[in-house]
View 1 (spheres, rainbow, N blue to C red):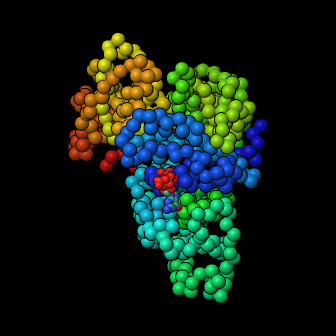
View 2: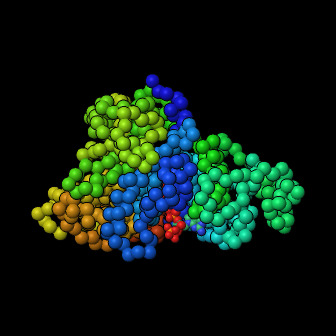
View 3: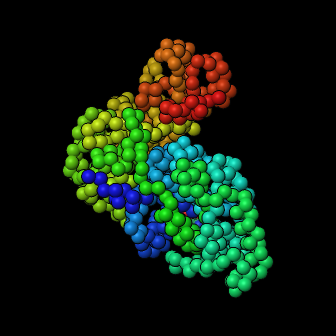
Length: 535
Ligand code: G4P
């Protein structure tokens, strides 16, 4: 029987940001608050230096670190918090998008100096596609940053989400004095390099000068009073329903490195962030409190030890109760599997577990059974939706350098693309393999891993392709006609779906005009996509 309180006490989320906004620092502070780690610096930097020349050892280190920090679970009060880590490097953005399908909410970190950045925008698009509830943390308030009203406007205009500040900063940079908690009417004064994890709050009624002058200069008190009046007039009050629908984001200000503003964030997160509720499968909606177990694989990690070819598949539990040693049903393979050593990632350590609940992420040793997106159940043939592929940005043709190793190359590239490292498009005739990635780094990873794990060697030849779009039509005949007429520019993805490879925006537009009966989609999640087709 499902235990409702086990579901309600779980909060599964990801911290997302443009690189360098402070995601790692905030993660570390949350773990400190949660008692999962004792010292700062315990969370390794899960990122590759943006400026460093791409260096393979760096990638290997990154892979090692990210296995360890893929999921960080800890107990906080009576809650169990599951933080799903997302890679910081932009070249691994697809990994992040997929991880977002496994969370119930996100905390979005924005650098107050830079405001809304490119990667923030893309991540928010993915959150919007899934109506994921978002809490925003404006970080680095200890630095001279952008005007906070401008940041609010950027968020609303660029990220297309309404905001409601729950705290408001008093000054910024050198003159940053702290934050005012609008709803609890409390003042939290800033002290740089705080080592304490919980800050004493000062209760203030109506922002009266008499009760504040002890802590703040009078001009700042007046300024704060004006700000709060304006904030209350301009922004809608907080509304849990709108937050849960992903339409309204509560906003906090602070400085993660200084441990400042993090406790308000965590307390509010605990109170409002949703617990596991439901997931859409192609066949039906699956609710977390159903008795039978279901889950899906959103990430696969190759084992770092080349002697062991096995991989770890990360499975998000959607409903029911997972039990060690029990037989479960793998829908895609129509096959029963049993897991003897399922892993849990409590307090940053891998442990074998006996049982797990909705919201939890478990690691399953995999000898090649899993692909990203696979669904596991107790027997019902379900297929969870919602792990879309986006168009890659760089396309190269893969050429085999060793004809005697063609089979190894074929197997290797299939497995690596199943892990989600890159997208594979096959073009006929000739079985040409076109690899699509978000960044150059993946090509290095692919070459290295093909050689070291599969004994195959390859070269990559750059192609003049700008975007891949998935093509659909009312009739098969229309699709076949298109595939024939534009054969040099079409390929099939790993699910055998037709993809048009446009060489530039103009090419895409003119093809659309020539074939008005076709729909061109920016992502592979084709259902309910009418509004996302290329117009
Ligand atoms: P990321 O995971 O989002 O990529 O960012 P990360 O936490 O690694 O932070 C990026 C840089 O910003 C780090 O500096 C970090 O110390 C700094 N930082 C984080 N929060 C704050 C803050 O509240 N105020 C200020 N002023 N800086 C902050 P770094 O020099 O790149 O790394 P490190 O040498 O400090 O490790």
